[in-house]
Each structure stands twice: as structure tokens, then as C-alpha cells.
Amino acid sequence: ARVAPGGQIVEIGSFRGRSTIVLASAAADGVDVIAVDPHAGNDRGPNEIAGFAAEAEDDHEVFLANLATAGVADRVRHVRAFSDAAHEQIDGEVALLYIDGAHRYAPARADVRDWGARVAPRGTMLIHDSFSSVGVTLAILRELVWSSRFRYVGRSRSLTEYRADLAPGTRARLVNAMRQLAQLPWFATNLTVKVLLTVRLGRVLRRLTGREPEWPY
Image (cartoon, rainbow, N blue to C red):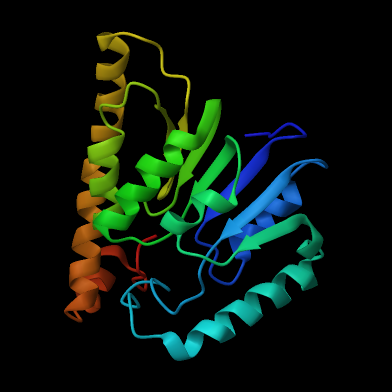
């Protein structure tokens, strides 16, 4: 989704900056790119929910170094705060919202609900780990499946795209809901893979698929 000059892109969850670099590199001149991440050692990845305070400052320094190496440091404003505390530091509507923050249900739902409310009409919301992470998927089911505002555009693996342009009426909402619910079999497959990997039965997947199993994203 192309953002016009004067608009802003907000990223929730930057970690070490890979997605931030993609967003900033693709943004047109005159577009503000804002990365929100506390770099507090929490929600760093699968099985890294908390207890990584020692790595937090390293994550922050690597994030800044990666932006500089990519040549986009001057394009990105970093808000070092948890997403629920960052609202007052960012003014106005959001043209493009990219959510890849905490994957637990409560904070994921808050990101979708509260930051989603700031997406401009006809703006875009991208959500990573959709129909893969349990918490993120439950947040989508709660906030977006029966939304009267966000239209489900589709997904690439676990990256879903929503547009704030859903047509009015029950029929449009029903079709929109069915298209999202149709992703649940893929979600079930991802859950099965994660369970098998967690209990160290990856060899079962290897035999079934003929390739080395990897954590689904």
C-alpha cells in the first residue's frame, strides 16, 4: 500500500529493525516512518516472552546500527515505549499500520483495537503472525472478523492485510467474516507443527513432509 507524502507509517514492534528498514526504504519522500518498540527484553520471539532484560540494550543498539547501515536512520523516528503508552507521542491518523508487537492475547488485542482505531479511512493495517500465533489470532477473531470497518484483503503466509474501507451492510460483513474464518484450517496446521516441535517430535514432521521442519511464521 503506497502512502502519500504527508502521511505516516507506524510500526508496532521493531525488534532489530528488519521490517523497519523495509518500510522506510519503500516510503516516499515526505512520509513519516515511526517505529514503536520499548526494547525492554520482552516478546523477542517464540518462547522469548520475558526474562531477557540483559539482551534489551543489545537489541536497541543493533536496531540503531542496522538502520544506519541500511541508510534509513534519518527516515525513522523511534518511540522507545510500549505500544499502549506510545499514543500520546504520535499525533494524527495512520496511513499504514504494521503490527508485529506482543503476541499474547491481551496486548495483541489492544494493538489491533486501539491502534487500528487510528488508521485513516481507506488506510491499511498489516498484522504479522496472523493465523499462526494463538494470541494474535484470537485478537483478530475478537476485533476484526465481524468488524464494520476493516476489510480483509488477504494474507501472505502469516502477514494479513486489512483495509479500512469495508462496504456498509450485513452482507459485506458476513462475506468478510467468512473469508477470515476460511483461514482457520491453516491456523490449525500451524498449531500442530508448533506442538510437535515443542514436544521434540520434529522427526514426525520430517517424515511427513520430507524436509527439515521450521517454526511457522
